[in-house]
Length: 368
Image 1 (cartoon, helix red, strand yellow):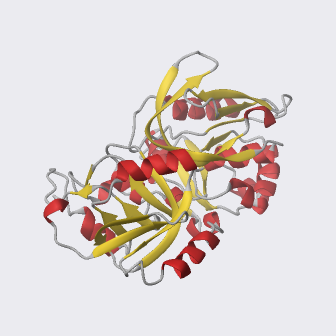
Image 2 (cartoon, one colour):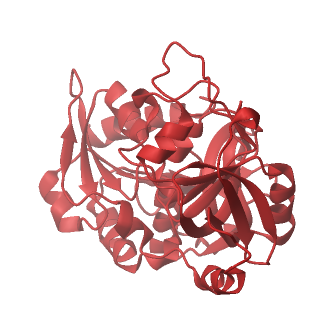
Image 3 (cartoon, helix red, strand yellow):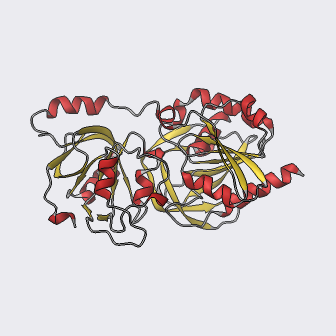
């Protein structure tokens, strides 16, 4: 365990001046980002490789991270997009039949600066009480340049997030037996979204975030998937304009997370930044149509404002059981539905994977 690892000192400096002293792991240096927390007990590798965490310093609330190691199969993308990583304790002797390495070496490989042996419970309470705030992890002496570093921390803003993570070329993935073709918009998509579509015999064509309606029309897909991704959804003005035209093609649309937010903005809705967001694998969501409550995997800091969707356009289909924020929209003016949570659930509960089946069924009906 990390309590026995002798490593260099590291410091976490928050925008309010709070300093946490801990130990360094992963890469060394200084990094600035938005400090957030995630409550997942497992799935740390999925967190580290989820592009939605671009620009963020991620805190794991579960006290021991890395106990089952790292393996290539659980990566949600080819890189790690977190700015920094915070844990209470990391395990240097992981045990699992799929294990290919430890989390410390993974962070070094991806040049991610981490800090361990700090009070993550206290840090989480600060974020919950005051809201998400900027911060920095540094392996330098924080006392020597605290004032200058605080100025940089306060000036930091996550910007050009989707532009920074999207692929710039079209990539195609074939199932064993093709029934449908889905154009998957890469706003920073998780690999398991692609895998869930392939399992349902969908040929997946991953397209760049800024793909236009005309380009989609030329691809002639049976369905369109708007993926998850990082940053402030309202920042993506060009993409929102593209969606306005894309939804008029009449092709069934399914949106997840950022895709859900962008679709709402394209249809007259509004988004707002949450105090500390929803990140973890235990978020309860109520389906307003069936009355059932599902446990879901989530990772977002913004939400669609419930009453901002024009009633002639669509209706809220799901809400968060804790804070009643919007978790899903079923559109009536266009052939689309979107959800804020992650039905691909990697890692997380499989309660809502049926939504992929519904999407496939929608494509079937549209083709009849």
